[in-house]
Amino acid sequence: DAGVIQSPRHEVTEMGQEVTLRCKPISGHNSLFWYRQTMMRGLELLIYFNNNVPIDDSGMPEDRFSAKMPNASFSTLKIQPSEPRDSAVYFCASSLARLAGAGDTQYFGPGTRLTVL
Amino acid sequence: AQSVTQLDSHVSVSEGTPVLLRCNYSSSYSPSLFWYVQHPNKGLQLLLKYTSAATLVKGINGFEAEFKKSETSFHLTKPSAHMSDAAEYFCVVSDHNAGNMLTFGGGTRLMVKP
Image (cartoon, rainbow over the protein chains, first blue to last red):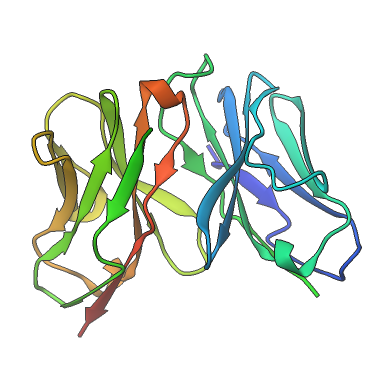
């Protein structure tokens, strides 16, 4: 398996622009997670899907952030409008967990490094 | 609530000497514990995982960790460091009460001197 796939790997944009990050989870995995990593705050969970349904989005910073999972093999994280403080590495992870609440190993993608000027 | 404390933000060892990265956790239930490694500009890779089976867990690249409930610790060790071990290491806890959520420690940066 190719593992979790994220695109783009790097994104540089100007403040105010819309940014869309993409993730393809491992085939057969039922849970998908979006994380943000910064020097100041470390790794933060933004949102978590199980069977394509958002289970917990309490980590989403504000209304400028939105995430969708239209099918089992694709998810997007959108920032509109983007701000310089959104600059970070965004990771997508997936796990087998069939039920929300079942602990399982998460497998991480390579991340998208976002720079907002 | 669950939490993880990695006691050292930076650890420096010489190549060929043992590695010890310390981790203490707090969990209200029987936890699952993980160690992940992140090489520069890379994603997180699972090193090993404890899920209430054997308390001594062996992982990839010669790493192992021992779950000690009485000490609420899950320290990561390796007998002999290699230059390629230089990376950031994260101790992670997940328990039933927190669902499928992972709580990450702050990370320990391991430096390996030649």
